[in-house]
Length: 336
Image 1 (tube, one colour):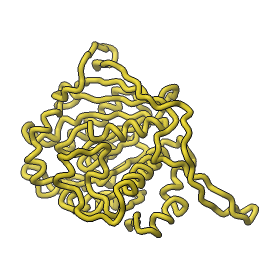
Image 2 (cartoon, rainbow, N blue to C red):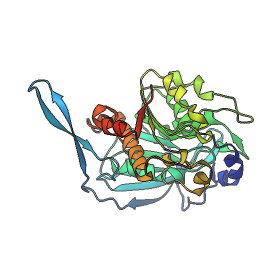
Image 3 (cartoon, helix red, strand yellow):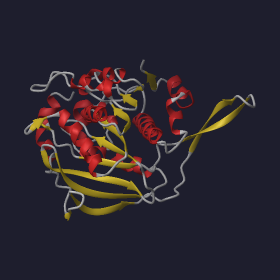
Image 4 (cartoon, rainbow, N blue to C red):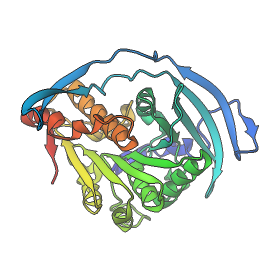
C-alpha cells in the first residue's frame, strides 16, 4: 500500500467524514433523511457520436464470419449528466458527503457505488463517475469517512457505509466498484448485499503490515461476494500491496482478472494528482500513458455496463474479440 506516502498525506485525509470543502449550499430533505445540495449539469451532448472498433466472430448458421462491433468506451458516452451533492448520516459518520451522477432521461434499476483509495478523496475518482454516467449509468461517489489516519482506519465500516448509501438512494440492484482500498471496501459491501450483481476492482489492495489494522481483512469477505467479479491490476509495487488484491478475486466464484503492462497505481485514478504520482508512478514504461489509460477506462467501463445489462456487446471487451490485439501487443496480460 502507500506506506510512507500515507503518512506524508495524512492532513489531506481531513476531507473525509464531512470535512470536504467542496460541498455547500445544503437544504433539508426530511423524507429521505439526507440533505440535498445544488444540482449541476455536465456538458456532454445527448446523441454525441462515438467511434466503434470492428472485430469478427463466427456465425454457426451461415458458416461465415460476420463483423462484431466493439463500442469505444474510452470516449465519453452519448448522455448528458446531472450531478447532485448530498450529506447523509451513516454508521459511525454523521456527515458523509457524496454525489450522485445520473444520465439525463434514464431511469436505472442498477446503481454503481464507487470507492476511492486510502488517504485519497472522491475528487480523484470524479472522472470515473462522469465517464460511467455519460454511458447511461447512475453512480454514487462518496468521500469515505474511515480512511483517515488521524481519526481512525476502518475498512469494514467503509464497506457498510457504501451499502447504506445505496439504501438511501433506493437501489434495487447494485454494482460495487473501487480503487485500491476503495476496492476492498467494495468487496466488503458486495459480500453483505444480496442486491449486488457484481463488482469491478481497480488495482485493489488488501490490508497488510499497517499498524493498528488486521492483515488480510478482505479474505474474510471475498468468497461471499455476490455476482460476477471483474478486476484490472497494474504492475506489482508497494503502492498496491504487491498485487495482494489478486488473491481476493481468486476466492470468488466467478471472476475475470487482467493486468495492464506498465500501469502504476495512479493510472487507475481519474484524475490522479501529484500526491499519488510522486510516490507511485512507474519510473519506466513499455507503453505510453495514453495507451495504458485508454485500456483501463475501456475495460472498466465495459465491465460496469456488462454487469448492468445495458449493452449486450460490452462484455466482448473482456473476451477474445476485445483482448486479442492487446494481448498480442503485450499491453494486457490475463491473470490465471
